[in-house]
Image 1 (cartoon, rainbow, N blue to C red):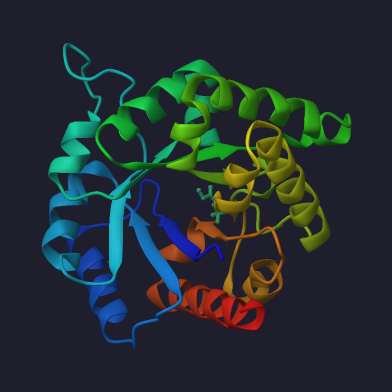
Image 2: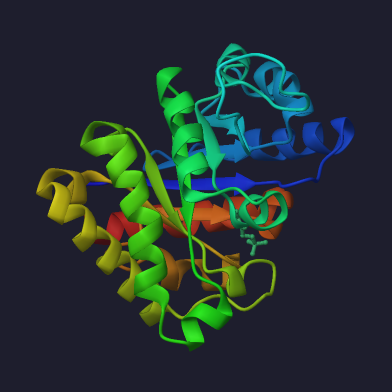
Length: 256
Ligand code: 13P
C-alpha cells in the first residue's frame, strides 16, 4: 500500500509573517494519520520552517538543489545545507527551472544524486508541454525524461525518490488535466518503471501537479495510480491545502 503525500510548493511566495500564520492554521487542525504533508519553501525560510514545524507531522523541504556538492557556485544551495535545516524533501527538475534556467535531464538527475547522497527524498518532476501533447508526443517526451533518471539513478536511487507528473499546460493555469489524462500517464509511468523493476513500480509514489485545488482533489486523489499531489497556488492558503489533504485522506480510506 503506497501512502499519499500532499506537498505544497510555495514557489517564490511567502513572508515571515504569512508563513507563521500558515503554520499556525495548519497546527490548529486535527492530524491526518493516513496522509503525509510537506511544504517546499524558498531557501531563506527553511530555518523558520525548522523552528515552526520541528516535531510536527508536516515536514518541509527545498524547491531545488545544486548538482554540485560544494564550491564556487554563486546562488546555489547544496543538498548538505538543505539537510542541515532539517529538510526531508527537495523538488528537482521543476518545469519552471527547466524552462527558465535551461536545466537538462542529465543535470536534473545529477541534482537528484546530490539529494540522495544527503538522504533527502528528491521529488522528480516530469511533464510535457501543450505543444508536445497536441503533437502526440507525451509518451516520447516522458520516456526520455524518465529514461535518463532511471539510467543515472538506477533502481536503488529511484526507489528512494518520488515522481511528480506535472503537465506544463496545467501549471498555474487553473486548468487541471482530466482524471482520465492523469490516470493514463501515471499508469504509463508505473509501467515504464516496471520494466526496470516490478517492485519499484509497485512502491514508487507518483504525485500529480497542475491546478490541484480542493474542488478537484477528491476526483484526482481517488485515481488508482495517483499517490498524492504537488500543489502550487492552492497550497499558499492553509485551509485550501488542508482541504486537499483531507480529500487525499478520504481517498486512502476508500482504497484500504
Ligand atoms: P499550480 O498548482 O499552481 O498549478 O502549480 C503546480 C506546480 O507547479 C507545483 O509544483
